[in-house]
Length: 130
Image (cartoon, rainbow, N blue to C red):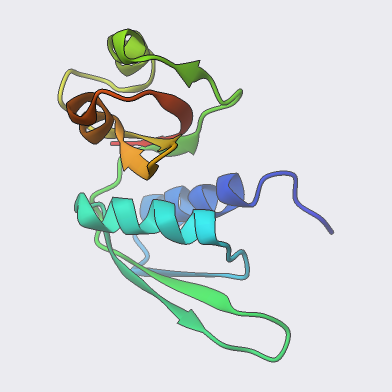
């Protein structure tokens, strides 16, 4: 079975396992984009970390959960936003000001909306987490 959006699948696993109170998720979906999003979520304090486990049929990810995620999901369609549009999308996807993060892809790599605002660049919205 092929997946339309592996990033959405991983975030759905994380959300479901957080709701169940589990401490780790093992998923076969593994890409540079997924690892980048997980790195940002770890840096912001939403995940405990992750490790790659090598198998003969491909690498899997083992993600440690710490119980800090209330909601996480992908943003579809991937809106392209400018610097002056951050507040509009913060109101749409986050429950309160300065609560949670929106991860976006810019020409300088993946970063949160706060970092993009500081560097005064826009990009494409990927996910949100709070």
